[in-house]
Image 1 (spheres, helix red, strand yellow):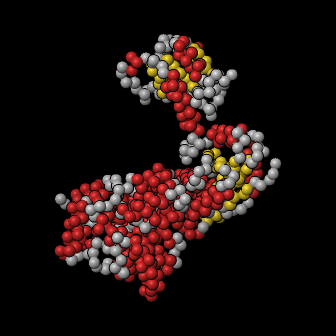
Image 2: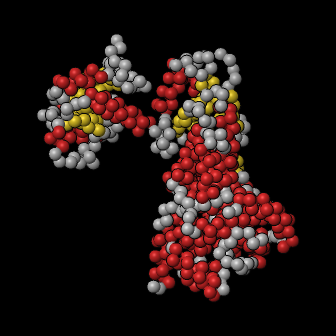
Length: 321
Length: 279
């Protein structure tokens, strides 16, 4: 049943939400906005039963009405937000105007948003949509580069596959990053990871009119999803900039020597070249790929090939299905 | 006011600068390029590399802690790759232009650009890699003078009067009026803005390259570049005198005077070429 196409959450499905409220009209309003396969609501009139359910089976969203009588809405928000396991769960609080006679201390009551009576449908709809989207973004951003992480990467790949849209996925990772990190420490390692993220994002963005996506898998691994037409040019651009900039991140002696020397635990002196970037490119053309898992499996195979070369390089997957 | 008080208050005022204006013609040229979707990073970098104020702004931003690698990026080309054109657009929108002091500043603009070119050529003659890094250092060597002119117009006026009245060079006049020179102001700015150490030392020690701690070569290149561009009488750094030439600089660079002859020939061609850019 498609009773409503105007709910605004086209990218999201199967969210589970809990409403705690004695107000039946609020319940009906929420049910009228989103179809069940987008947001499925569970309703509680009192906090008591709801709390157990929230702890055992946390939903994607919690809406608490300040009219709940057995415990206060503020107390309920505090229960959820004080445990790191549940902290990420977005909480929206519902008010009567009189509840806002005095300012609330939002540092104390860490909710994510509020709604106010009389409820105006478009505002309720978009506030909740925004809260859900914001929670997903915040949860999935890489804390270092602020780029989207694995959840968003997988979503992006699968939605392109589902829409049967051609794309190229470039999997980028650094050679000799570990030896750099070991010698100079993780904070200088992080500098290199930030630099790499900037290069990849800006190189991909410089192709006017192309819809591209850059994600940070974690550590020194990044993913670019873009059109098959420009991916090779993008690889060249990334490599050119990376090779030009990375020497700045070494101490002056190592930069001159073009290598770092370190002694391993056995006391053996080892020499490592300057870092390089390897890129493995997978194409999905004509719908040959059905599942995002295939993409990463092919990319991992190609990555080994790209890594055989100690210099920055890219490898294109040119096999046919 | 004692020297120490003046230094503290001047330093505070210098570092509080929120906007350095640039010359209208330069800004126009960059704006046009940035608005054109077909222009490349290289093209934009080339134009920005001609202007000490825009270059300083770009390097300041890319080396700020926000981007996560302070003090690492030395060239404009690399800065643009890392910042992206959106941020460059932002910098350009927020940059104002020189009006009142345009005439005085355009002489300094040419002097800085000349010193940038000379520094690049000298670095090449000395056999150093990445001459672009030396070019940037040469471009920024008198930035302190621009900042003083904008932030402390009365003191700047007093320096200019002292140059005329006492027939001093600009650097000595600064010391008479302020108690310190633009090299000290450069040092404050470069540290405050997290500029890379080689650029910072060249800005700080271009009058005394032998005092630089780690990058004597960069400071020496800029010292010689500053001298040569004055010899050509290209632009104006604020005084008519040839700056004092330190033989130590040539020693640091392992160059002989005759090694500079091809550099001078190359530069005279370049100065003729870019004189079309002047105002």
